[in-house]
Image: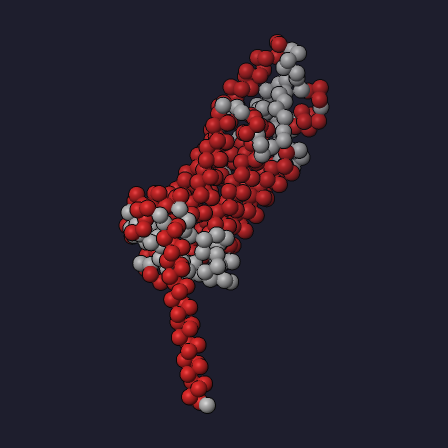
Length: 367
């Protein structure tokens, strides 16, 4: 009886081994289908087959590219692997922000103003003070002009447009920083499989891109809110720039680029974001009675929550840590992190539009 049981157990073990081998063969066939053409010589590999420098997330078990030539890495943008959605989420975000920048330069309201629902009404005077007279301006329809009915007041519009063209550079600094971050991220995820040397270089570029995006995000709100207090502009913009430079210097260390320091990198970026609480509180106190206060705070709150939630996914590596291997191709934490970065940037774009419209029409009290 014992011999029969042992034989039955042995048969089950043999069947399991055969099933595993069959599964591996099917997986290889699937990988071959994913990588047609030249990439047949460069198959996707498992986590344990990766060189040490590429081992970043042990919960992503399969579909890695390792030591691929530049050409194959480039064309893999159209093939399915565990970096495909990481590349495309930020590449599409980059294209979107390029379109937004162009639409604002060319003044295409259907695209450029899709984040806001505000009308472009011009005041009769360019000397309306943002701190003291905004109630009078925003609350009184008689203070607004109809450019179609009064040709004489077109001069006011021209002077306002000149003012706007002179003060839009902080808005485009933010757009430029966002585009640089999104593009550098896409390039990093696409080509970091080439070699150890290029991997290190691209990771550094990725961290620099994130830092630049955070720094440039401060320019529209601080410049426009404190436009009548240049010393505060210098203090806050100088402060975040110095913090950004220190962050870049720290993260350029090869030690800080490993998966072990994932949380440390996140804390560095979050500390830069939390620096914004200081000028935000200052701005709320300074403009407590302004109608735009609640609108801009709502946009910025959505931005902060988006970045915070995305960072939590990045640090915890949820959901793949719950089911290793299940989210290899789609739905893992880094892809979710990318989506929240886009949402946060778009929300800040909406706030920047409000800042730009609000301040470009109003002057400072010179008395």
